[in-house]
Amino acid sequence: MVKLIGVNKINTSVFISGKGTNLKNLIKFSKSNNSPIKINIVISNQKKAYGIKYAKKNKIKIKIINFSKKHEVNQLLKILKFNNIRLICLAGFLKILSKDFIKSFKGKIINIHPSLLPKYKGLNTHERVLENNEKFTGCSVHFVNEKLDGGKIILQKKIKIFKKDDIKSLKKRVLKEEYKLYPKSIIKILSNY
Image (cartoon, rainbow, N blue to C red; front, side, top):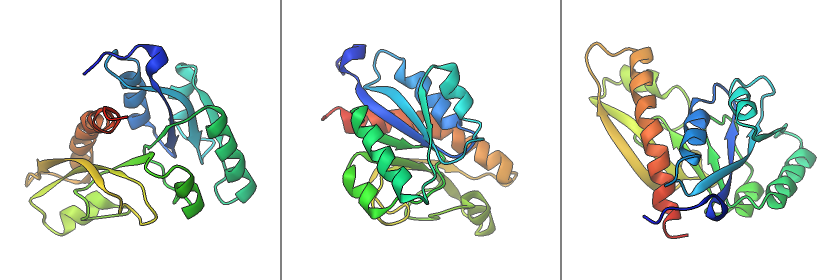
């Protein structure tokens, strides 16, 4: 892998809704020499999202968008284009993007999901995994298309479920894998950019 200097890094936006631990991890990754991305702007649909603190701390621009207002989404498209955003990473972003929005960034939006897709799309994945007595779970990074958690998978990581696991312990172990998988997936798709 060629080491990329700041100037050659790809302008990236991270979309969040909550705690932002994957954002925090992506910011750390973006500052490393072997990272192909530079996070230019963080978008949130929640003005009280805790993850905004990570963006502020790292002097990254922040924009709060109400995704149910079409004019705000149109404004967002202009902001992303103005900032020359070439990759969008969804990180705990709990809104479904419109078909038009996805079309505007076709093949340039990726998401991390806490299950082995195509199993357990949507919310409450850990609860459902445990209720169904699954032996394994994990996380997936995939391209975003019009179908909920339905885009082409980039990478997955499988982990064993232990008898003693509950929702909290499982979430913690899966999250640990997400922190490794998201950067690997970004490197994988951008090495051919």
